[in-house]
Length: 447
Image (cartoon, rainbow, N blue to C red; front, side):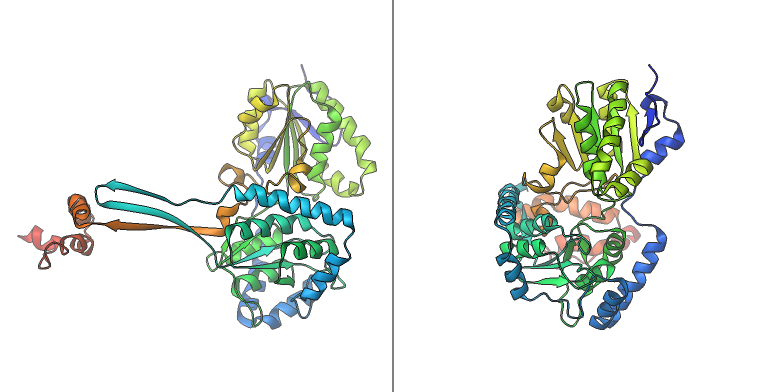
């Protein structure tokens, strides 16, 4: 059977017949911004590192998103919380509770074992001292992203969490975001955005102490800045445009498939939306539903650009093939709408977050289930997972040996150290038993 008519907004191809060009266009996404953005960001970061608060203020005036004094007063946060509609406040409280309960299950646990008698290794985890959380803002507010970045840090036991979020052109921060900050007990919030905010968190200014790690989503400038400061400051991961892939068969409702694609595509005109289905008739129905839904949505212009430039429908021969492509694509969000959705979803191993069945919309995970919505994009789901409690701390190894334990493994140390020509390594073990042992490998070879 040939693919359905491709006159809709999304391009349609048969998966088994994808040519190299189309395959590359679909798969080749990246979370790393283009070189031009990275060069401009490097200049911004360098200036803020050198000049501190003055450069931060200048960048805020030039690019927007900041106030002359970026620190948000606790009274402003408290006032926003007091003025929040009861329904919004209850929704925030329920979301915070769900996120907290889910992340409480992620607390890392220490381990200890012996690799030989008298040779013990402890693996211990500690929370970071100070973390910066970047929350997108400016033209819109994202209180859900504040919840997703702050709550895991609080569960981890991070002592200080500094939040940065852009203000609008009038210096105003979204009041619902401020209310969420009040509910979370955030007492260090800065009105600053973009690359300059990341640099200020990483390097510090006269009034903003530097942080040990920066987490949270952002646009290309934010992502480029996170990559720029990495090395001086840890980051969670670079984040590219939000993306979704739907795996569906003939049992799926085309209207639900359409809205699941649009749900993530409305984030921006560069957000990919991909459907992989075994049913050509479903593909036709989805095109029709998207065309009908777009005029009803306020962000229709963004959505039209997203689905026209980054939207695809791929017709797979089997569900196995569809899942195989999903794993190759490694999407941020994967929705599974098939007859055996749990079984199909079990095969999806490369994804930031998987949504199983018709009652599991992506928006549930974005706001209310308690799962984290800070997810890997651009194919990074092959090697990274959602933001979690472990991202707010670090592991260390503690090694304790008895005399007998060192004696047991001494031959291994001495042989391998000698093989690598590292005599101090060898002597560090042997001198504990014989302080006069100073002969080097070279001496031994000459003898």
